[in-house]
Length: 308
Ligand code: AMP
Image (cartoon, rainbow, N blue to C red):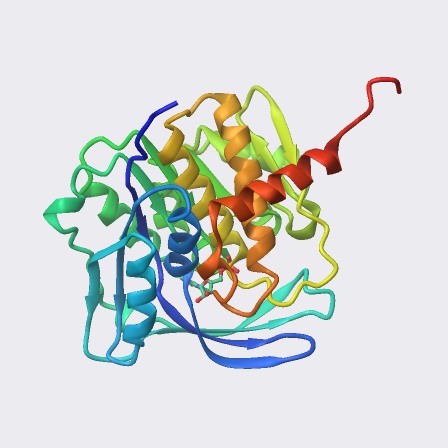
């Protein structure tokens, strides 16, 4: 295990979200894939963000990230409005529909990495336009690990750019619906086989409250989601998962199959906190100790007595 954590470079959205949840609605919630991932990753490793915000993005939220060892040298503030997303969740909180996506300052964003980011060996391509994900990779010299996320919006709208991005990825993290959409297969095992032929060495399929599956072409691993009584807001759970996974791998440097399995458990533990509050309220204050406690709870949850 490495003694000192390597930095994790994260590109993704920084956003305002309008959320219609079964019991509450919340407007102008600060979110975005980079925001959630950065908070989660910062528990384990120093983080470097590449993103763009508009004039309206609150400085206080940038300061809060900065206090968590997140380097914001790659966050550009442009004139105009911040990226905005609106979504409505089903009563069971398992599915959601996107009501609106406004790219705003992301529409003509071209990421330019600060020189200090050039040596980043761990990269998380958070959910954002796949062309921007590739432009970031172009500026990193020989990364050891590239983790990527994407979503239906890009799979549908930019299939060629998504295909080009997949060729450059080590670990792809997507949800089950996206895996089906990307592969054209309903069955998750068939979908995984298909997606692993397109570039990624490993695929993680998130299944919401039913956990996550890790496929590497040789074996399959299952990580449960922690059973919670009160799920408040699932927004950002996927980004939190990917951020914690990437941060943990940047900390340990252990990219073996066992190391990846541990990282999936860490991602699942971190995501279970994210959903307990609206927006980043919980993930923004999470500690390594909190994650450790939940990993202990997972061990108890998964314990099978020898005498069966
Ligand atoms: P998750 O719930 O993990 O899928 O992520 C939700 C976050 O993704 C929200 O905070 C949104 O602002 C952000 N988001 C939604 N759609 C997009 C998109 N097309 N590109 C980038 N970020 C997005």
